[in-house]
Length: 352
Image 1 (cartoon, helix red, strand yellow):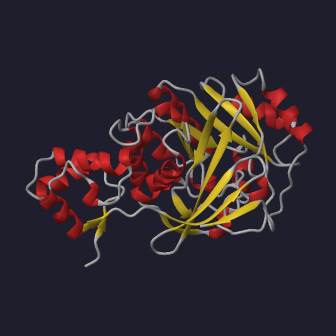
Image 2 (cartoon, rainbow, N blue to C red):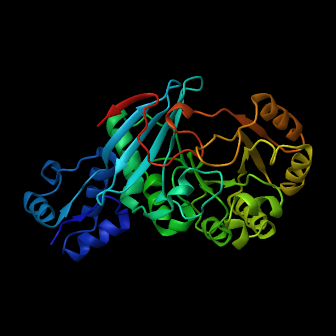
Image 3 (cartoon, helix red, strand yellow):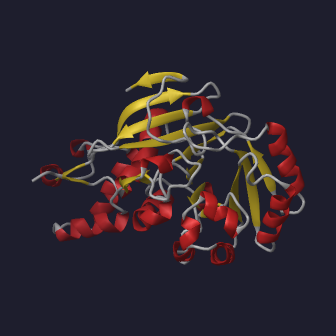
């Protein structure tokens, strides 16, 4: 029988496991800290556990981190990590430094591939391979901390490969580990879950009490336009979706973020500005405007920087807060919408 990987077990799960083994539940908390705080994968090194207990654990379990397959660094400092999962499927993670504010954001994946098939997104061309396990989700963060230390990132965004709310329970369990002071010890306001609009799961996440931040990948302010680029809009219409986002903001008492990728000639007119400002009226929010990053083979074009800046200026003060985001890591296909688990020859490439 293959040994079970404990990476991804929550604190209650480890406590229950030890109780089933006839041990005190607090042993589960000890092991939990070894896995997530100390990042120790060898049971023999866990010196506050008795040797017989360590031997029992080693007979039945392993703690296996993610395996790096490929690594690339952009000229702007962004790094992309391609991991190979235990079944050889690929998944990508992006680390984005912000030297001016002395912080960094890590963009993590929740699925290998994605089933939503948004018309403008490279990940959507892969289709869904499978959901990531809890261990594979938090393993992305543990790898970076092992490589660069605990302070290597300040913010975590579920904006990599996949739709987080279609892997709901594993994402929620991974959030529990991230937020737990005995786990990764991150603050709720430092974590953002981004969704393309799985309406019922937005409400469900709001009711967990986790109070992580929510971002909606909106990209069009009318149902007619949204359906043209995001097939999920056929299942979850814009009216009900916006109601669920409003509910999330009310439940968490925090503002939400609307992500709006500007596509040349599609959603970049004054009519779009006005439709967007009407859509988000009364919702505590900010809008992130960013230019579309072209994907080979897809029929969309990137607007000029002047057009993006113009769109942002027209939105504010019609919207409570507007940020025009600059794309990072475009030269290594690490920017928004470009993740497709490809090794390419661009940028400075490092093999594992």
